[in-house]
Length: 323
Image (tube, rainbow, N blue to C red; front, side, top):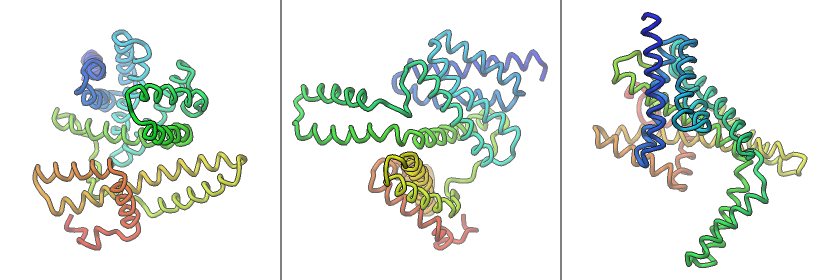
């Protein structure tokens, strides 16, 4: 590929990413779907060109986003989509295994989001890791003062307000875990969607990831679960152990996240054995969504994930060569 053609292609890919990002701002409902597609051109950019041209293309895209949407939106584009997209493409050129690309991509996603939080904190004066309790309580009071004017009963409002206040109080504590889970999901979705787009476009695809039916995490994850319980118990001894409490709570959330995904993988595996075709995939997707959305089903999935981690339930019911 000549230098001129390479620059032109980089500019076109950067422009396409900005157009998809802008669609998320101007299209009310389907804009969210376009935003998921925004990293795909940047993945191609990082996959087909060296880091110098990929970085130059990303810089051009960021400037275009600033010109059309403003500097704040351009920062969200750069750190929310751009760095991850170009990073995944670059990693796919360096590693042959999809799992390696995904794991390093999650670190890139987490790093860019942490930087975005720092920049957003400087611009807005709000630190999501250290939210002011009095200000948050004032905001909650204003929200529920509005709902009191709508005719809702005071008893119902009081119960909901207590739950909402407790959630707000816990948010700064669990924010690191939430950010880590968001980075992992963002990277995974970007990887899957970009791989699909590359296959359809006839380009070099990203390395294949293991099928969702094969997702299993090592038993050492349960050791992290035990450590999280010990840290939480240590943190409950007093204010001097506050850091241990925060670390334990966040580690517990991350471990439960892995248990949940292993449980969902197990459910998908058994449903796939019983269903087939387009309708079967649709049914499995609905079941997974309901499992995630309904708390009691999510808890069952977590228990199944723990059981599968120790007992390998798939091989107990079906031979591994039947997958």
